[in-house]
Amino acid sequence: MLARCDVAVVGAGPAGAWAAYTLARRGARVTIFDPSHPREKPCGGGVTGRALALVGEAIDGARFPQSVIRSARFVDSRSGGTAVVTLDPGNRGSESSLIVASRAVFDAALLDAARRAGATVSSSRVTDVTVDVDGARIDTAGGSHRANVVIGADGANSLVRRRVVQPFPRRLLSIATGFFAHGATSDEVVIELVADPAGYLWSFPRPDHLAIGICAQADAGLTPSTLRERALEWIGRTHLADAARLEPYSWPIPSLDSQAFATLDLASDRWALAGDAAGLVDPITREGIFFALLSGQWAAEAVADGRFPRDYTARVRDEIAPDLACAARFKAGFFRPAFMRLLVHALQRSAAVREILVDLVAGRQPYKTLKWRLLKTLELRLAWKVLARSG
Ligand SMILES: Cc1cc2nc3c(=O)[nH]c(=O)nc-3n(C[C@H](O)[C@H](O)[C@H](O)COP(=O)(O)OP(=O)(O)OC[C@H]3O[C@@H](n4cnc5c(N)ncnc54)[C@H](O)[C@@H]3O)c2cc1C
Image 1 (cartoon, rainbow, N blue to C red):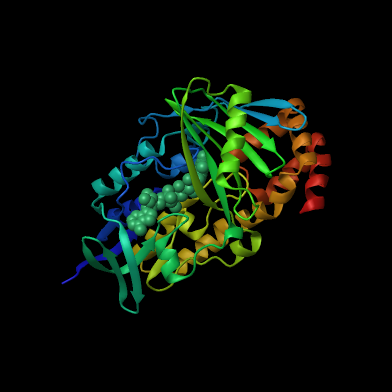
Image 2 (cartoon, protein in one colour):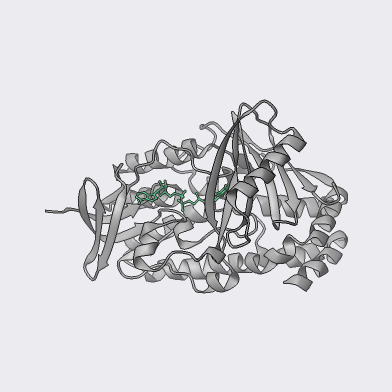
């Protein structure tokens, strides 16, 4: 006889753990599968104020080890121009901060909350998923399970996604490569804007190490080892992590284009995809934790309220996808050398532009109104023209 539950959640990252928490709180019998904990996930670990606010009822954001980010340093690699932007934590209450946490710590806190709410946690890897009209069968090395609905929250390489639709093609993925620099830390995020590959190098400080990385579209023709060389060269040049022990990582990030955001594969009668498995990552900032939490919560609420899959797909399509599609349209222009130079220049001179960027980093500035806010600043009216020309 197969073990049976109402909902099976595959993957206990932010999307899965938060979906399991939400379901368990509403009285559903939910089992969440993930063999990886405790583990670090390749990630900057930047958690925005809006993400912390979403999970505030379950985990005390102030109690786990974290670095509260006081400033972000933006560097234009071509001109060498630098601007330091104060993030001013505490200025706007719970929505204020960008904190950086180890994903081992943050994800464990979420999974713990799900367990305390009543979810069953299985440390088995899911080896296969089959969906039929009556529900889903979940196979693990330890046995098989049946559920009325399966939520695929198993990340960018999602097995559930591969079984119910198809994997992301390479052109919709980027590869992030870099190092955890153990023994170095800071309270400043550093972002160096680079034209080739179009994007940026970053250093995100956690309490006892830095997460340093670089990212490129998977079909850009750059191998992880080439990208790692770039990150190493940067570490040497900036002295960000002198004497630190460098632990390498490499991981895919969904980086959808606007067309893909308009045609997301989200759910059918017996399955849903959430977080990275659904492709819900900001293609410019690469913020994914907030969208993972939100989509996990919305999938769970739709199931618990008996309005699945309709409510889930409608909410993601109406409230998340349009703004991410807008970001995808801006992306090429954003990383053009001319725009990056003007942006850093404007950040040096204008408090209004710094304020806009702080809001963008903290997730408070939607892309759909970014244009109008930038156009109101004299400094960036010109930059917007550069951006619009490439959009
Ligand atoms: C280098 C890098 C830097 C990033 N920086 C940031 C940042 O600073 N801020 C931010 O918001 N986002 C960042 N992101 C994006 C962010 O990491 C993801 O968007 C986020 O983790 C998505 O959460 P998730 O729950 O959907 O998936 P994941 O966090 O990937 O969790 C998926 C889980 O599924 C489990 N799993 C996979 N397959 C199976 C299986 N077969 N059976 C059982 N379990 C399985 C895995 O073990 C994992 O625990 C970054 C990403 C990368 C790669």
